[in-house]
Length: 136
Image 1 (cartoon, rainbow, N blue to C red):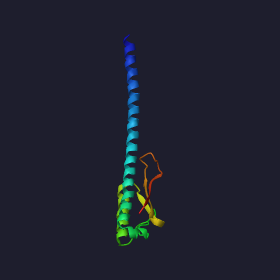
Image 2 (image 1 turned 90 degrees about the vertical axis):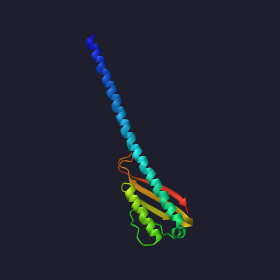
Image 3 (image 1 turned 30 degrees about the vertical axis):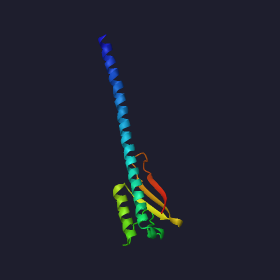
Image 4 (image 1 turned 45 degrees about the vertical axis):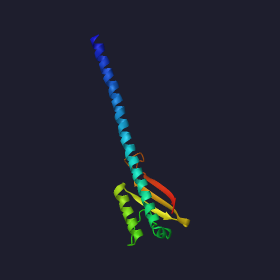
């Protein structure tokens, strides 16, 4: 009977170990998803920051002064160029491989794209994008 009790203890330890390993896996997955959600929140904030800057300088935005392509570096010395430079710096400093584009179309339709690398999250090696369509 003594050996049987020892066997029961060993089986209980194995079952407990498997449960703890499963719990550790869930925690790791939760951390990845949490980080991915944090980055998406930052991208949302940055996209709406660009829209706010354009609404504060609406006439220049409607004239195309805020248009910016992905990978482009803003230049110039007017308010729109300063806004774009600060926005681009915020993208670079806040998101991994952060980049963005702004396109103002006819009638004040605006498309803002914020792009970043989400290798730590669920996106793998693909670039994630947050896209906002709005009206000035």
